Length: 236
Picture (tube, helix red, strand yellow):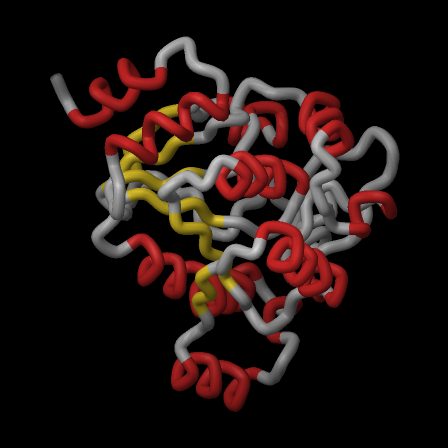
């Protein structure tokens, strides 16, 4: 049985909380959850912290987050009395990019935007995942066409680990219901038309009928709006 088959069999037919519990028990010290403090991530954080599961929770602080994101981050600390690991961009690389191209180079080209994401998000993520076997995320299938093509348990060839998306089959309404029922702190930007929240200069509210990720890098004409965090193979 392969590694991914083992994980699939372990959590097959389990609800998100039970799946997380089983993963925590079987991969102690080798499992992490990444949060950007959005709806889905807050649900999983609540499941981990409320049940005192042995899953490290980490976030990537790009230096360009919304003040509302920092606010909900602090509320999470106050609510659960748990620490969240933080990974920052490499100072030398960030200073070089800003010194050569200025603070808003990402608006000028797709290449510049990907460079910024690479420095502020992808490289810190690589450090956060080093040595891990399981990476838990808040991805849901209906967030984008690209994500519909994923599986709730998948092999990440780039990071050489297994990714598990416990809420993959949940709808947004189910996520919101959980938040309300469990009084989970959430980002107030969600109430202002921000379904997907990233860096402040790169995220806007979406209009009714627009795609879930239409507010991310809205100035770019592309159908596959990902920053590089969830690419699972070098060829992707």
